[in-house]
Length: 322
Image (cartoon, one colour):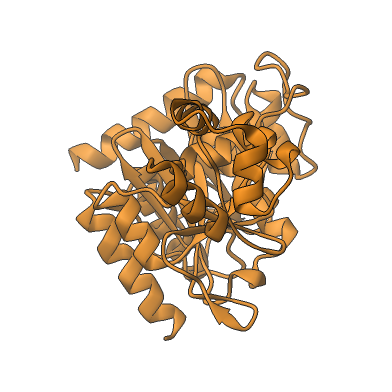
């Protein structure tokens, strides 16, 4: 299976699940391959035949973009190391959930979440500790007796009941056979990312981001926008203030710039935000599809965020009228 076939299959699954899917990001380097939205669910999807090809820098950028734009990063592939990804199993790579196309289909189309997570040493299942404890007590079985039946320690059973330890698939199947109850907790793929990213030291919303090093992006920052710089996305940054957010490109006018502006337009449609390209020098157009083009000299003449937002809205309105 080639990556092109894999991406085609992923697009089919997402569209069947009523996602709106962006054009494929075919500009290198790229931190994600597709953006997709279904109602309030926004995905940044990275596609790799071997999920071990994801590096930490790319993962960090995917996570930063997802957090900044209210979305979720997800990695879809076919294999890991020397084996194929298993169905209904979630793998984690740098805090990003990774899965195969079948698991993607089951989760988004059939609304059947996976039950198994991959971790060093094998495949594991999260047990519903309350169900386990109640089922054990219903048949008046002691911790010791259940532990002896499974060949584990009493402390292990206690940890299962307290939700402090996942169990191997064989252990869970044996427990369910003994107690005649379903014990496995399903995995909500998107919520699993949220759990991984919880941090008591998270930045307060009122705290502004660090000023960018790029001169043009710094101009946007001084107008009053927070600017999240990117290294691998199809755009140079995401700029945001209290009332507006826009994908931000920076380049001299060229055919390559026009290609990138087209792609940014498709992505911004999915993200449901504006797309803006700052052109160094002269531009032949005011917009490319939904991407507004602004010359650097025009940017220099603006006083604040309101001026920039007004210019963007005027050009976007003019494009729609024509």
